Length: 225
Image 1: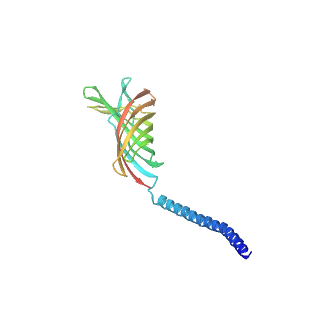
Image 2: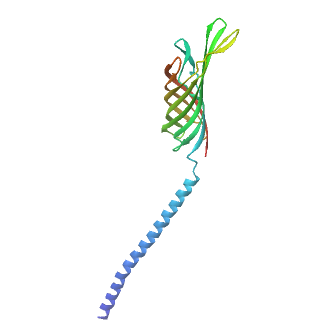
Image 3: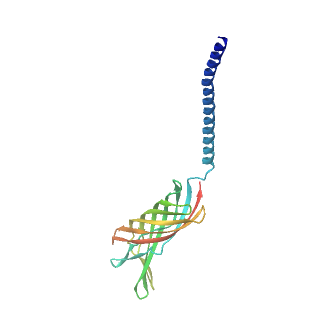
């Protein structure tokens, strides 16, 4: 009888000990999980804070041999699609989106008689936006758009007797759309090429609407903010 009671007590003690052991294991697991989560969060935060800036200040220069003021309706009154020769802006969204503004220039001249020449120049203020659609570690394919606010200056006629300006300056707008490929030389420098189609529409005496293709070589320097 005593042996039976002793066995029963031992069995009950074992049953009581098992739940306590399970609870202890759960508590230990919870503590480890909490510590792991806390450590992972800390590591993630540390990694994020030590990473490079997502915002970069960028300056772009473009070379375009197609920017010309040319004849339309017998006068120097049309402008090929203008592209900015200098642009400043920022890169955001992991450097995929560029937003900036630039300045463009175009000029043209022609001989109108023996010893006489006419010339005209156009300037443009150009907001620019581009977005990388395909990217690798060293290159990117992107779409680009430019909106031109154009000022076409007066026609200047130079002769042996002197020069004279016609009161024919006009204003207008233009829009360029295209695509480009940019290759990274390093984190701060890149070079690329762009190609697209655009138009310019000028209002005033001798209104004109001109359109055509444009292409540029693009150079970019940037720095993290």
